Image (cartoon, rainbow, N blue to C red):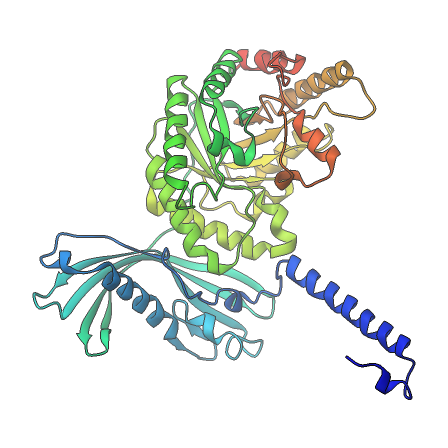
Length: 498
């Protein structure tokens, strides 16, 4: 840009400074917008379909004559047509009703504040199976089974809630024309409501456990490294301390990426087998460091839940599924209703995969527990607050639990401090653990964070501040060299009284 031509109108240096200021301010605004999750409740726009949706609908091969002649290209075409046809259906009334993913395309003009409510549905956990293939390959009939989630958006209050969840079955017929495959009919043959699960879980005894990662492979390294000898040694330690349970965390990326998911699931089964050998029950946390609640992820997340629960749901060592670790920490950025709606969908997905599965949600704080008490079997929360009020906080949660068991799935104390010696901090850790275990004794389960110190903690977990990584490295009952700390004996003494 040639600034000299404007020299008779304005000082070029002032003009350049003005342009630079606008660029800096604009860049900062764009950066802030990109880094901050949307909280405008514009769920439809967020859920706009992507071009590639290979893993939203699953093809199930049957035993139909001529089916073997269907190519992979044909099967992919059927799925694309089904998903696209759903998105094109919509009807607008005084209270709009959007069918399937149709709401995605009409959000800007139809679901606005001029309507008090917008009711709409999405289909997740979708599976299609051929039930008829004509001999000349010109007609095919498919059966689609899915979970239909019907939601309501209240524009006046800017909230979203689940109205119903149904098992739906459709028969869909295609014909082959000069232009390719065309969907001719779609008929709903059954629509069975899934009732909210609100049964009372009866426990045979209390759980006393450990939040577990191997010392050398914490967080997202657990399933990529899987140090088997170390894991077996740790499980024996937990058993010798009198512990009867562990809580573990799955790294979503490892269990969904094509190159790693099979190995990760195999390692998860091996871990459960190890725990069965030691008579240790396992609480498996499905989602941890993945705060993504937009509706465009729901189908994929439900498929992940179905995949994991379908594989491990009947394992003898599995005690329960923790749907999401500390989901309440995402309320501020994503909206409580968005988070709880997602949790409700994941709960229904888990029960669709295994109706007998036990579910919970590991809230980060006791005040969050009443955000969702249906569709889960026991209430669980974490207590890192001051020691004063331990018992009263537990009493508060029990009152909210409506008779359901209550567990504190994280307690613990770091020994790291820039102002105290190792010996002094270890003694304080033991004293605090003693007070916590005593004050929470009436709970149905307590899980300590953690068994071991860690020799490193990724910045992906706690950020780049070195003191936060140091704190997280020193919560263990055993130090980095495997030597027991005073808190280990406190935990063992507690378990001897169970």
